[in-house]
Image (cartoon, rainbow, N blue to C red; front, side, top):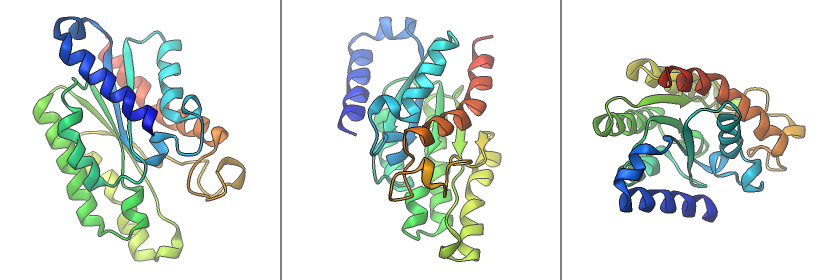
Length: 212
């Protein structure tokens, strides 16, 4: 996580110190997320955000993927951080927050409000930004009513904001011991590779459209 935050700080201050050069460099994809984006328990280059950057490079697309993942973060934490992160121009926002809200039993309506506010702030600063919302799900042990209401947050906010939806970030990974660390919450390197594919399916068409 420290290295991720350091990378964000470096990128922001370089852009601020060199505004002219910042305009000619790659466009930016910000992944605003929690411990999954931060790559908890795996080497930084094994996390899905780093893997997305490699996919961008392999596709020869002019984008830099910035890791805005902070372990333990919630939608309210992301809302507190977003103004600072928007000091660097954002062309694509991949919003990967909400999992910790669910694990803490936060009211889904509050999470929905926070996600809307994050998107609204980003669009107010950069009206042409493209937004991708990563859906999450909670285990059924939290009760059917809660899990259903929680799962509905993400398609709802995506529809209301015109964002692209990743239906379930951990599709093919969640609940599989072979793809998760012992806590069964955080993906292992093999799991992150699948998460990266789940994200890439949504992200690549957006990047292709932006480069036309």
